[in-house]
Image (tube, rainbow, N blue to C red):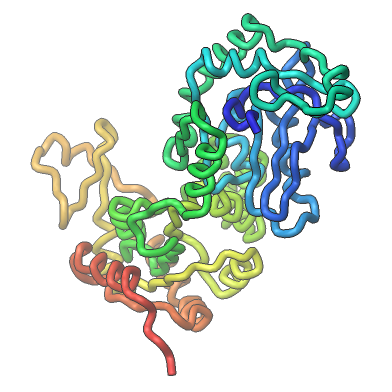
Length: 413
């Protein structure tokens, strides 16, 4: 029971009795109906690689156990297992509980550990001494628990902790482990039984649809600002994948180079990875830029991506042309301007403004015609979608969207 107080420390060797190959170096401390408790066992000479640990955890979580709801990991995060590595492999946590105690308390607890060389059970000279005298004869001091060795591991933990805080700070719960174990357990249990707080009335999964220039990006930004949901722009995801030179990015790059639309199956794989990340599960998301037609919407449903609010922003072709065809960019400062809505006050700036080729009227019209040609089937696919007039003040549009988010859906009779 004392393991909880120093959960991030290296536990002593335990028997491998859960079906893992020996080279996995994993031991499971306990299996319960709704909880899995395991620890990594890196060799004393070298640390177990982070990628190896993640593979082990994924293997463990995929085992056919009855409805596992909790996973307790010892000595994982302090080894530098960063959030993005876990998210890329869909090893997602609902939250992170960090048990902390003064270093001297942890050193004293570690010095008291003893291991039964026959069964591998762990005991403690103060907290958990065996009552059976025959067991006492089998107890030995585990390696690497001296004050110097423990201090060295504590130093490494403190060096890595800022990175853990930066990656998981928004879902992290600190629990003081320098108190009775029952109290520690009660605080942890209370925390994990309640979902994380969010300013939204539920976990939003919002889909914004509409033609180019309908204001989807702006409305998504306003939702992010007020409710803290994750802004998922499909086009931006594709660009980031190419820039980061990921495996999917390598597949996407030829489409970009040739000016062709990216294949739907590649887009769906990238989109599924992003929407299954930890922050999207906890805070919700707002998606825009996909789907563009009914076939893509069906692919979303097959991938188990189910928005609980769908909005179509309707604007006229004339409004779209006004919004997009008058956009300009200052190549020196990077500032964006609009001839009608945000003109530059300086003649010098006006003289150097440039227009993006995609904002030429002919190019915009091709995109608009393609959208309206496919929009009717997309609208019929999302039967419970809300249709909002996007040809009005952005704040007014946002208030309409917000009212449909915070209020219950109307009941159909």
